[in-house]
Amino acid sequence: MPGELWRRVAFPVKMPELPPAIEVSHLVKVYAGVTAVSDISFTVARGEIIGFLGPNGAGKSTTMRILCGYLPATSGDVQICGLPVATQSDDVKRRIGYMAENNPLPEDMRVSEYLYFRGRLKEIPRRHLGPRIDEVLELSDLKRVRHKIIGQLSKGFRQRVGIAEAILAEPPVIIMDEPTIGLDPHQILIVRDLIASLRGRMTVLISSHILPEIEMTCDRVLIINQGRVVAQGTPADLRRELFGHSNYQLQAAGDFAALSAPLVALDPTLHVTAQGEPGADGFRTVTLATERDEDLGETLLRELPARGIRVRALTRTQPTLEQVFLAATRRSWDVVAAVPRDKPAA
Amino acid sequence: MKHFFTLLSHEIRMLLVSPATYVAATLFLGFMGLVFTKILEAYSAAPQEISPIDVYFQLFWLPVCVMVPLLTMKCLAEERRLGTIETLLTAPITTTEVVLAKFGAAYLLYLALWGSTGSFFYVLQRFSGDVQFVDAGPLLGGYLFIAVSGLLFVSIGVFTSSLTRNQSVAGILSCVALALLIIGGHALSDSPWLDRDSFLPLKNAIEYGHVWAHRDDFARGIVDTRELLFYVSSTVLALIFSIFSVEAKVLHS
Image (tube, rainbow over all chains, first blue to last red; front, side, top):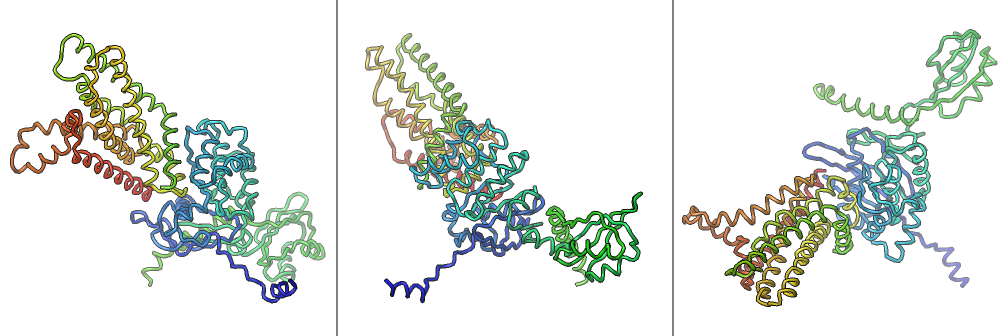
């Protein structure tokens, strides 16, 4: 045994590295001459929760349908857990839980009947199916409506039936097309918790127009517009990439004409971007911008009073994901609009 | 075909909870019961030359043109209208399995409804006390014809349901297609212009697909393999077109 132990320590067995959950490379989809998805590439690691954003008609649903093996791609390569969707779509479908846009469900079935039927199609053994259905009903808070007909359920319950169905077979990849659409804040909270509970166990790709929701739930964001990926990364990375600065908002009084020099002394990129009118007490709202990532709040609170500026409030303001989304999509439109202007010159 | 029986049992359950099924069953059994009563009245009033069973099965086309559309119009059209076809096809199943399960369920229900009319003949034999009223040959031949021709009729219904999202449109298309096949062939076969030499191939084709003539053969106890081949091959063709139709709609969805 010591020899065996020594061998294990000296020559550790290297575990084979698992392929990423989703790997999309140069994906193109053309419908009747219209390019819905144009050369998209991205990778999603196992256990990650990704927000898939884009304006209506950007190609989100088409991309999701291709990932699920429902639609064939015109060109490019899509792999789910290392399996190519084009040639092994049945194996890929076994590894995916999909909730389609608008969550289509059969109107005439009871919730438990529907989950049983879907479980059988997803090849869950009969003896495991009953306990698993109980588990997902519990997770999705659907136990009290399990015997109700789906057509009679409210929108919130129907959405949860769709999510329960997607996670039923415990697939490594879950794809949900707008799972929180039409839900009230209480129901959104339940769905958010449900999705958050999957973190680390399953890879989740969610498309949504509710951007604060995506920011709270997702590890990373992928923004597409006009069939192209226009930005991807964590919300913080995207803020840095698209805005390149941090903003500070001050409530301050003093001699602002002489403020520029001390600001440059603190940080060469720090400057005043907006200044409000002073109130009766002499205080006004001033907005400062800097390209530095580190928080300058403490420095400002210490240095500005030393230079004769009285500060009564300071806030570091960050662009919201909505602003990031708008900036990213606007940037892509600008690029597309610039192409015809550039062409004659070329 | 791993999931065929799961889908088939699901489809049968869905048909059994659909109001259209009960409308079709009520209309069918009511109409066939009425026909049967009228036949018995006619036979009790005066002796007739042909068997009452033969007369009964001659009217097969009328319930077929109504019942088959009612049983099949919803099957694929409704899946497309609700969008559930997308959820269905993202499970590890094929379009072929989906179409065959829907066809199988509608066909089994079609057989069950026709099978239930067997009770009319049982009641007749039980209470008339005269075996000549219920001749086993034409009865078996008639039911065999219903079973074989039903394959084609139901597959046409499934095909028309695959063409549209609107189940009413699917029902009307199915009714028209069945009427053209059953009544159109019969009407054309008597047309004198088909006797010209140039129309001979067309006349042969119409005679090959003449459903009424097939029924007469089955009623006389003749089971012609060409007729069996006609129904089986046409059914396969209609189902292949249904599969292509569903896949084409998915590609352009």
